[in-house]
Amino acid sequence: MSNSELNRMIDFTKDFRIAVFIAIIAITTIILGAITEKVLRYFLYQKLNNKEYDPTGFKFLKHLIITVIYILGFAFALI
Image (cartoon, rainbow, N blue to C red; front, top):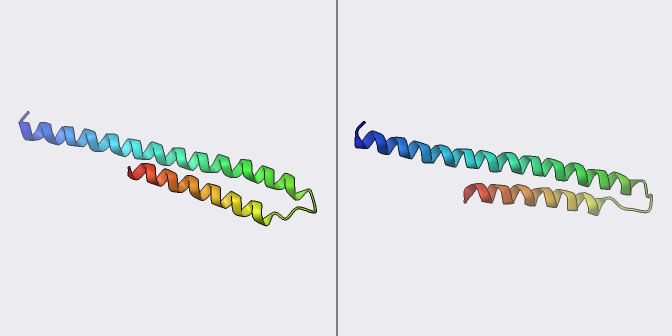
């Protein structure tokens, strides 16, 4: 095995590790976003039973939290 072939193999392993790391971050972000969405939806439906409660603010907060989770996941993947 020549030196250039060895260097290409080492580069491939580094690239593969980076790709696996990014995939793990992406999967974790999607799972965390889905779990958060289900938990917040559960609380929203509990509050909807109270007729005096306006759900608009809570829906906004739910979307904001999920968006922040996805942005943080994307930022970690870029790092």
